[in-house]
Image (cartoon, chains in turn brown, red):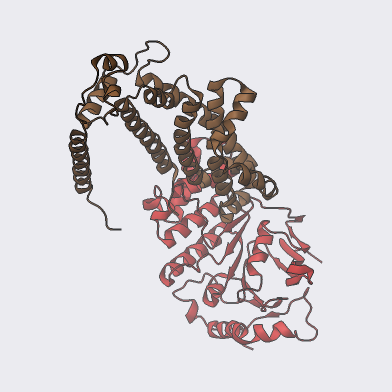
Length: 281
Length: 285
């Protein structure tokens, strides 16, 4: 691939965004339904929109923009259980993701290390991993709710179970494929097992492990929204579901945008970490 | 019988074949010795198990039969006293040249302070002419510079024996020559015992006191030992003008081109693997 000029790509991105928003604005102008004549008493009873038989109109970018600014102006308010700022909801979701992901990393990396170093364990555990890995994390939810009973902990468990596999598999693979000659160097230098593990195998496998961690954080962030929709109570996923019940599409669009931006930020954080540990052979 | 400093005693290496057939013998009944301070080269075609012999000496591989005795003790595994210079240099790519050497120095002296390790590294960096490259990662170094780091790393643990597995075969001819001279000089200065695998005849004549000639595998054997009687110090500039050089070179080449294959099938009668015949082609008959 030819090296792209960063400024030109940026300008093109901006142009595409303006075009997209412009078309959206034009489309939303045209879709306003005309006012049908209805009984004013009926309208007062069920609300103007329902009375005309029309749908809630899809919000225009200007409306969504205004809603985003409102959310940004006061992201951390708490007015009762069902009315909390988008920042508070995000904090709940991030907290759950980091808890589940953190525990998964603490389990997966040492376990992956052991599996990677022992072909016997690799062979023995591989069938379990292959069966458990493709299970949708949400399928665990009823089991988690039944055994754990606490809904908040259940969603952390779901994050744990979905983010453990890429980290486990990548760590085992990275450790198992450390070049034989590097291990031989450690052996001829009479390195202890621990020194070999931390000074040779870990740095050699680090880029592969970090790639696994990056895949995992992406999956965890995908899953938390769905898990919170199921579990309810708090979190950005619950926020989306709640606004659906309120038929507030502008809020949903705001949440969608925020979910995307946070996911990108998490991914970029791990990309930076991956670059820090990568090496060129 | 007096044992040599390094005594290889009847080692064999067999690999099991698939489907339970008879084991494939790469080599068997290999006996030879290396005296203290001696430089021995092993020369032979690929597939004759040269690298396996070196790995057994290093302790990285185990012999199927027999054993190796160094300074009166049988070796049981790798040791800091037997340093290896790998063909592929085997530097750790996430460490700089200096850190690679420091990794070895710290292995030998776990209790040393940072300053002591740095001082020792600097010594070896200077000795192999790496000063300008000390802070670079291996990927940024040329093949010759990488192998210099590999040499410095091997020497920095102050081994008793230096084992080299075709250390210069991946380098271009000019770089190879320069490094051969450096290894020659360092080994002579430090009076190291050295064992090198090569398939380069000129390299063997330049460096070795004795050259072991190995027949083709499978069932490879050390057929003869060529004693290099050319006077030391030898350098690349003058070694090929020394009287006897041509005879020596032709003798080894003849072996590699022709006899290594013929001898693989039938050894001459009276050949005893424990008393390999010595030849001195450079001495006028």
